[in-house]
Image (cartoon, rainbow over all chains, first blue to last red; front, side, top):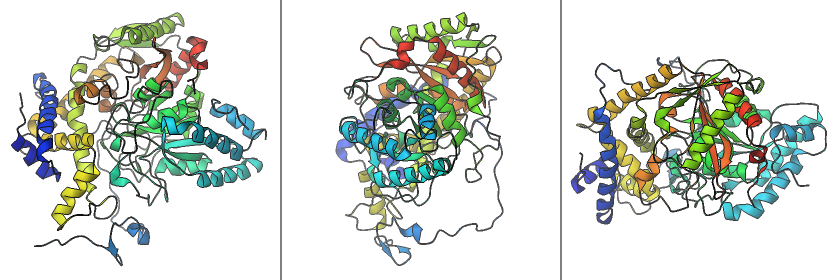
Amino acid sequence: MSKISHDDVKKVAQLAHLRIDEAELEPMASSLTQILGAIDKLAEVNTDGIEPTASSIHTENVMREDEAIKRFGDVAMQNAPEKEENYFSVPRVVE
Amino acid sequence: MSGFQYKTITELRTLLESGKVTSRQLVEAAFLRVEKLDKDINGFISTNKDAALKAADEADKRIAAGEKGGLLGVPIALKDLIAVEGGATTCGSKMLDGFTSTYSAFVAKQLQNAGAVNLGKANMDEFAMGSSNETSFFGNCKNPWDLNAVPGGSSGGSAAVVAAGYCPVSLGSDTGGSIRQPASHCGVVGLKPTYGRVSRFGLIAFASSLDQIGPMAHTVEDAAIMLEVIAGYDPMDSTSINKPVPKYTQALSGDVSGMTIGLPKEYFIDGTDSEVENIVRDAAAKFEAAGAKIVDVSLPHTEYAVATYYVIAPAEASSNLSRYDGVKYGFRSEKSENLSEMYFNTRSEGFGTEVKRRIMLGTYALSSGYYDAYYLKAQKVRTLITKDFTDAFKQCDAILTPTAPTAAFNINEKTEDPLQMYLSDIFTISVNLAGLPAMSMPAGFSGSGRPIGIHLIAPHWQEETLFKVGSAFEKLRDKNIAEKRPNL
């Protein structure tokens, strides 16, 4: 039975780029533990020799020619939180 | 003009064609109703009356020129994760509050070409994660049948706008039951097509191997009319399957004689309200009296479906939602010293609790050391769940189950217990894992007057079977079920 610790929550949050405050650590740990407890049930199923399903219907990759088919243009910038000309502005990247 | 609120698509089309009403009049009447009722129901996140009237005028020109067609001039609504170019699309989230779509979804373009008039974007659980429309950043949607009850979710708004009589048909999306369960709770028809039947281009992604768009309407025929318009191959969606679209509106024979309908024993369990079970068994009896054979079937891996889904869907979601970082669009947190802080702050402030919980769950299931035990294991169980259906369909043409274990629960009743909320998806969830088409349709009411639906499942690509059995049920069930209206 997987018990999620506060440390586990912090590690996973780091991977997911989510900030979990001190006050939220226990509620998050607790609900993840509860849900994973229900999920642990899957260990009961014998899946020897069973292929995993990634997608229920199609089985092949869809390819196309490597040709540009459409220019997005200015509309690509229309939702930018901050921009300079055709560049998206962000806070400083490197220390 | 008024009195259109519960007319079917066919009835509205007849009025439009005969010149008795214009599309503009229908849209004006719809907005009067929205303005009167939606402050209490909150079915719409946004509406655009000017754009709708403009589209209605365009439709009226086409009608005057003699054009006919299933949805020409008919008001509709779209769940707010379907992109319409130049319009707001929020996914029920702060993360996309203020975002304007830069292109239209395939289904939106199909509807525009067909002359349908979109009234607005329907409320939903945030990023489609929920079963009650209680996680929307824009407030709860209420069930039109009882404002203390949830409409279901995540397509709560899409169900409510039809149930409240704003428009005859809407589009929702279904990843684990998000069309069918709110359809059941709101007393409307809700259909999830076979995976790959309807293009996901312009559908903001939650779980890419499970998501499908589908119609919500008052009648099976109206659902068929909508499905004919939105289904079809789209090269812009690499999971769209190139199969011709049948004339679904010709599959409404309503004749089940000679068909076999299966009742899976694993779906009749403790925890299902006896009112719900009685309604489903009564439906089976009606089908039998009409010439169908009823058989018991087994779907042995049913008890693992919720667990399987709650690994796969959050895992796919954690990947799909990694794009929300405040850089190119959407919400950006203001107080960041550097890029990394901006990512963490934006995502932490922009997402609600349930979304964060599912991202955490998915990230954990995919992380090093856990991938095999969780994600890979779930994918294998998914194969077994799919095989259960393949085997069962050797013994029957369609499967009949309850849609939900209960009628709609009260607002705030399940918000403290995520696991309880997840378990309410138990009957709909396997269908998404297997990629099958399925439909919920109104079948009765609880003692307290809340709608209860029955759920029909068909083999891959057999939406016609759903329409055949569904249209039969509309003839066989008590007349008062279709005639009852919410008290609004």
